[in-house]
Length: 434
Image 1 (cartoon, rainbow, N blue to C red):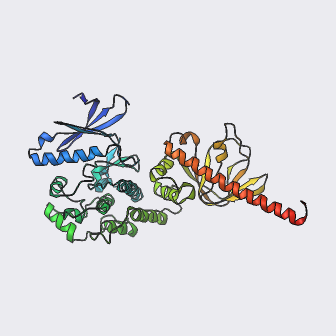
Image 2 (image 1 turned 90 degrees about the vertical axis):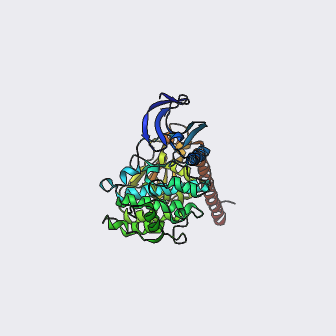
Image 3 (image 1 turned 135 degrees about the vertical axis):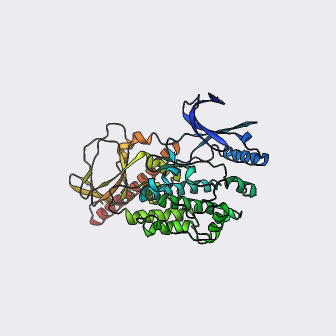
């Protein structure tokens, strides 16, 4: 096969029971894409073929709806008789299945980072009115160390009924929530449970319930408490055990109520275990951005863009960050700590967490020279943004930076006016101005 529709086939990537995935080239954009071609003729039961077609239609309906850096984009879909396929963003790498085996487990901090990004992606999907309903390692793609993309939204946004149970339960229902196997009404909490199982498997290389039949699996999901992940991997800290257990609570009232709660506990884990670590994890970065006044109007998607275009570093106490007279166009936001702004040794001001500096070099024409020294008062964490990198962000993200700068400049003008007013008032009192 050389072509599917307008797409030029490069090679086969994999084959499943009902579909084959190909790497292809979009002839117009010349970008690589992944095409999932369904072969519904192989489903001898017409009823099951109809269900799979419904799954395909669901996935196709999401084309262009979910735009998030940690969700694989659905670009196109075609359903014409026996020709049924979905075109997706091509993600080079592997699924998390590879890292869910005992002999190939990832570091605990890496797993926490991956799960955090899954939480934020699925929270975004929920806000778009979408529940995935089929979260498992095979549906989470990994690029590099921790960059993930959730794929296969075919089961999303469907009314859950017995037919869907049969389709999605092919093999093992190991990642299904109790309410899923009971065919109850589903909310985003079913994805929370399933992601908890994924976390369990990534941490330990084991499924929570090791059973021989689906019926036994269903019984255990409904009635049995699994061993803690640390029972299989001694270095797993109690904090991680607790996060997994809460995500997998059978009672939805005891389970995490929101993705924010789930993600928040992962942030707490990092804050407790990563203190003094030179590396700043994306989990900490994103949580920091969300807490800073400068970024209050940025959407979550735009904050992920900020992470992509920024550099983060720790600066020791009393080290110079900027020198008076030097050239440069990068600007900085203080993620942690305070800095002194000095001119010829005289202290002009102190800047604290959330404040920005160096933005005039960004806003001015080329050839701008720094006009002050900036020195770390104590150890600080800096967010450095190069304007050239910022040009590669979306229009929306760049607009938010411009809006944030306007608010910063307005506050500084207000402070300057207040100081001038006080100075004039003092001069009037002393009779210098009459």
